[in-house]
Structure formats: C-alpha cells, structure tokens
Amino acid sequence: MKRNSDFILKTVAGRTVLVPVGQAAAKFPGMVSLNKTGVYLWECLESEQGQEGLLQALARRFEVEANEARTDLDVFLRRLQIVGAICSNEKEEK
Image 1: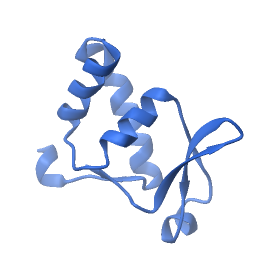
Image 2: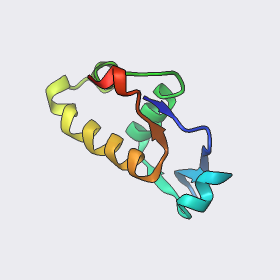
Image 3: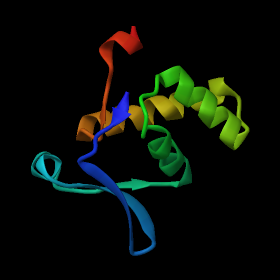
Image 4: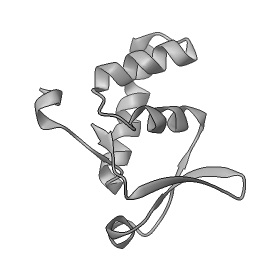
C-alpha cells in the first residue's frame, strides 16, 4: 500500500492533519487528524509498504510488541482506505 498523493500533511491550529486536495477533496470534504504514531506511519507510506513491514517499523519505532500494535495498525489503515488516503496493492496483501 502507498499513500495517495492527493492528501497532504499539514499542521492546522496545532494539530497535524491530512488534507485532501484535487479530486480527493471532492470525494472527501474533510480532514483526518493524526497523532505522532499516525504521522510516522504516513511518512512510512511515502514508499510502497506491506502491512507487515509497517507493523515491524511501528514496533521498532515505538518499542512495542508487534502483536500489541496489530489491531491499532489495522484500524488506522482501514480508516485511511475509507477516506481514500491510501491505496492497497492487491497482490501484496495476499
């Protein structure tokens, strides 16, 4: 999976958010608020990443067990997919 280039990371009123631009703004007229973990994952998604790779990077960066982070990562990625902020690589997920 990889981030959609029609979403940009901005700081608005002290909060870090993903803002849709271009065609993404027509489909999702809102913003997605990110905490520091979300910002880190968004940065990781600059290049193509598999879910397991993201999980390992998250576990290393925040010093948590991969199993502890799995559910949170699943929720985060699902939310980004719903708003169109990331695209999945179907072959990679199988």
